[in-house]
Image (spheres, rainbow, N blue to C red):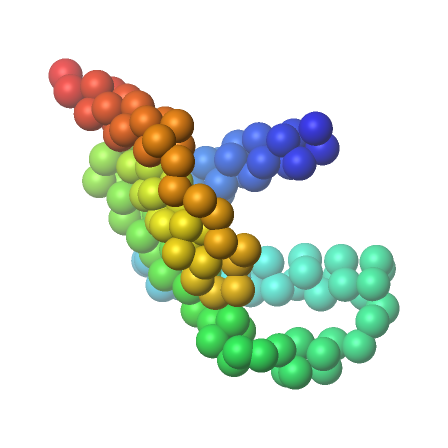
Length: 143
């Protein structure tokens, strides 16, 4: 149940962040806005690390395979693509496309067992669920 509630909070926070970042970008620029977003996230993460963990930070540099450390780089492009898509389509449409793309790509990662994720079976029920989500996006976009 806790995971479910955290996932809901994550979705709400992602939507708020996208709207806020898009508004900041309108008053500045996309890369200065993104830089500020990531700098402020760095500050919050460092404070949270100092307050809660106090474990060695150097363990991050021992992570293998090394490509797993590209999450921050990916995060920069996530911020960029969310801002651009929300500015062009509006928050609701952009988030619907983003969520469906996340659903499809994360299920493919599970089914194929990529990046160290435990392989999951391909099921008709989950394929139908994704098809319903895609149909929902089409229905939502259709005016």
